[in-house]
Amino acid sequence: MANDKTEAIFESDEMRELISTFRKATTGLREQVGKVIIGQDHVVEHLLITLLVGGHCLITGMPGTAKTLLVRTLAEALGLTFKRIQFTPDLMPTDVTGTDIIEEDAATGHRSWTFVKGPIFTNVLLADEINRTPPKTQAALLEAMQERSVTVRGENHELEPPFFVLATQNPIELEGTYPLPEAQLDRFLFNVLLDYLSDDDELAVVDRFTTRVDIPPVTACTNAAEIVRFQWLVRQVPVSEAVNRYAVNLVRATRPAEPGAPDVVKRYVNFGASVRATMFLNLAAKASALLEGRYHVTQDDVRKMALPVLRHRVLCNYFAESDNMTVDDVLTQMLDTVEA
Image (cartoon, rainbow, N blue to C red; front, side, top):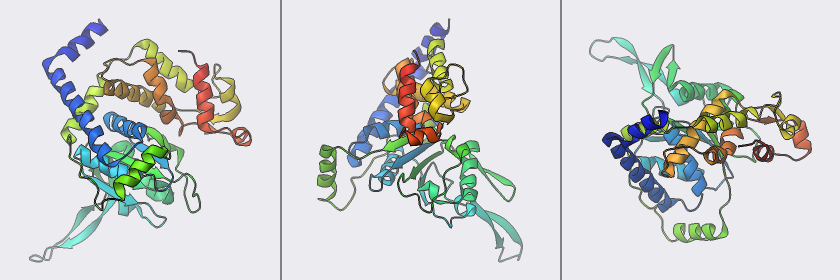
């Protein structure tokens, strides 16, 4: 019955039109981003999945790996409003959210409070070097990420959908940084690692950007209203009980207190992932399947999304550090032990 109902939904004329629009938009997005960004296809794919799920993404990479350029280009291709905040130690919460000011009517002399919106009132917010600002400012961003709203002087201000935070951080320069709280890390759908390019891609970057001054123009392929519809479409992709069970087993295997946790987790992990990780893993797998033109989720989709969804939610202990075991090393071994 469930399969018949799903087929009926996807066979309707309205759904066919939406799927056609989705395919055209995602194909165009890849082409437009490819005009500016060379290589990093997996990072572009993860950012697209983040937008389709309606989540947020943490991009970890070395300086000079085009993190900012990638986010700005993607925002232009999406046809969304874009703002960038350079996080610094002296950044205040009101610098992010906005603040109330007193305005006086020149005619009557009457004074009133007026809210001046901060840069967080946008569709795509680039939080550049997010770990360089104090916890008080990070907390202001946390409310927006979770509630899609900000509170200033007791007044709640809603953010227009869609709203995405794409944050960057430098993995090597830790002096003067404030590690992100676990509660904030858990709000990010992905932690994507932006690595160095291959030699051919690096040569192509040098050829492209040393022979011209301007950046190639990018054309918008979609808009805010369509993206909200795409987010709804992703949630309609069916997932079988077996695949859902596999996702649950993967996340539960990261918890060392679980009776069935692998030995590598029991030895090297202090804290595992939460239920939010399971939900994000399910949604990311749905979006991944839809991007590949499929209307069903496989266990391979879940496994492919496991590392970026889990790596920032699993906290390793000092045994892992002493044995030179990274979170990715632990998770990779764990994935090999959890049966499909």
